[in-house]
Length: 274
Image (cartoon, rainbow, N blue to C red; front, top):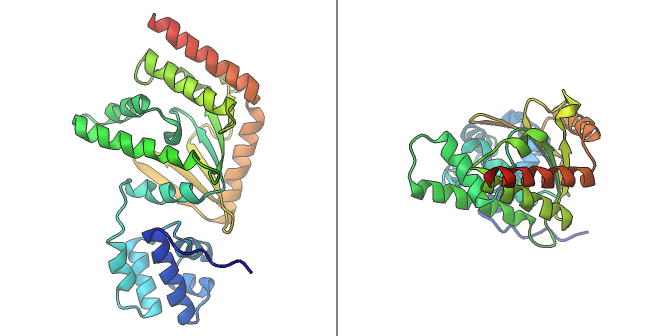
């Protein structure tokens, strides 16, 4: 039997303490989930440190385990540098064995160059300072570290052709961004496919979506819109998301065809700049 891994982050310590307190109380994950009003899958993600409970969930956990506000108070000390709708996803990315992402309008954050990220942030913040932009860019580009090292997740990236054509930050920024993605694919750091405009309607045309798989837990799906994000653990919704991804991938260009299209788009941006 494998030896349990020692918790490293504060989130993992939080989850391990929850697991120990639940076991001491003689409750299964399903029984605790019934009292917290959530799925046993979500309890397992809490205990693995992949997700944090919401404040009202933490209060129900304390009531169920008789821990007198312990988990609710600890939760207050685990604030994330990310927006509330994305904080859990950022943690999950680091622990996933496989990530499958689809982008409809923008390059996924984990692949963005600093210049591209800066252009994205400045576009939707009418009043900003250079310091604020610098902080956001650093936070975003730091996410790319999940792709470094032997334990990095397998990364599939599916892009709508519109991502290649939308000129974010100007011609030079787009050229550098597209070449970066293509270089990563050619180096084997990600699997890359493009859904061309000629496909027309496809199953993922309404939203950005990320699918995450784990070594010891059920898969999850995340969809994002304007100032909102929805992390789904319901097996039926996750399965439907996986099916939509597979169907769209079936309509996409091969990796070699996708690389050729991306390189061509990068050259078109370069030509327009000249």
